Image (cartoon, rainbow, N blue to C red):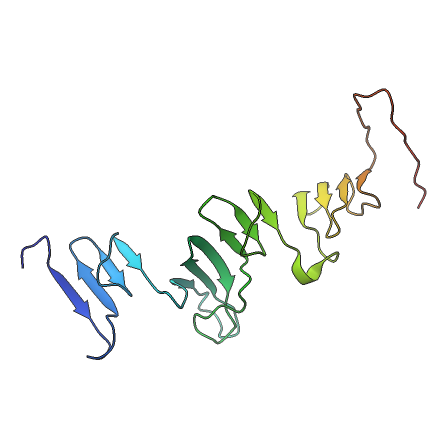
Length: 173
């Protein structure tokens, strides 16, 4: 074989599909024809798993590409490489839509609160001591507060309105 087509294939056993292939184009794991310097391929399992290496009780983080979508999921502690759930921590589809807690993002940024509806904020902007903006699990927005009581709650601030007709009611907790 010429140097441009040379390859070495490593198999776990003679009847098992290739485990690793080295070619002049790159290294393939799960494929005999790598297209990149490192090409990881699997149609049934995560292509890359990152582990802390500290404890078998720590979850691993699994990366997988399926149906033109990139998924980041956690694995069950002590179970090598298999995702804990089909709902990923993060997904990015071929249109560039980001999904947090969903495998099917329906907008540029989609957040699915799932079973935690109402118990955890969907979005927070600020620090651990000051929250500038918060959207709770029910879709209520708080500016300057972590406990919005209506669809939009402003705390210790002013509201600028470019309209001559607005109704404002005072809230007394």
